[in-house]
Amino acid sequence: DQQVKQNSPSLSVQEGRISILNCDYTNSMFDYFLWYKKYPAEGPTFLISISSIKDKNEDGRFTVFLNKSAKHLSLHIVPSQPGDSAVYFCAARNTGTASKLTFGTGTRLQVTL
Amino acid sequence: DSGVTQTPKHLITATGQRVTLRCSPRSGDLSVYWYQQSLDQGLQFLIQYYNGEERAKGNILERFSAQQFPDLHSELNLSSLELGDSALYFCASSLSPIETQYFGPGTRLTVL
Image (cartoon, rainbow over all chains, first blue to last red; front, side, top):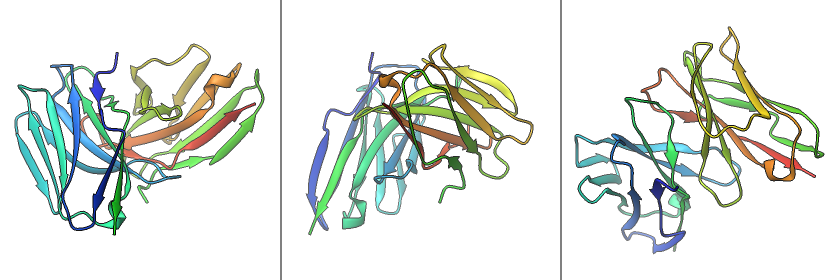
C-alpha cells in the first residue's frame, strides 16, 4: 500500500525555468510533509517542509504547496539550476502516533543547459 | 555533510551470512532511525530508537535487529542474509522524534 506517491519518475527542465515536482498521499492522518534531495552515492538531504496547518512554505528558490482537500503537495524550484539535478523524495509523517517517515519513490529531476 | 556517519560504506557478503551496520548520529541527536532502499524504490522505514529505547517499528524482518547504545550510536544487525536483502541502508538522526531527520550517506549491502 503506497501511501505516498510520486507518479512522475523523471522530469527534465531547462535551466532558469520552473521545476514542479508533485506528490500525492492517501493517509489523511499525515500532518507533516518534507522534501528531500538525493545525489548519487549520498544520503537524502533535507530541503524544505510544511505542516498541515499551512498551505505554503517558501525558502529561497524552493516553495512547497499543500492542498489538503486534494491530498496533494508540490515542490516548485524557481529558477532551476543545473546543480538541482538530483532525485527528489516526498515524505510524510503522522506526528501523533510515530515519527517515522513514509517516502514516495522519488522523481529524478534533470536541469538542462 | 549531515553529521551522521555510517560504516561501512560498502559491504559484500554471501547468502546465509550475518552483518552489522553502524551509525553515529549528529552530535546532540537522541533519535536514530533505520531505513532500507531497494532498487528504484522509496526508503522504507525499519526501526527507530530514542535515547536507547525502541520507539517505533516498521516492516522490519525478524532476521533483522537493532539497538542503540549508551553513547547513542546504533547498530543494525542483519542475519541469515538473502539475495533480496541487497539494498542501501540509511541511518538518520534527529534531536527529538518530532524534529527533522538528517540522513547519513548509507551502506550499500550486496548479498551474492
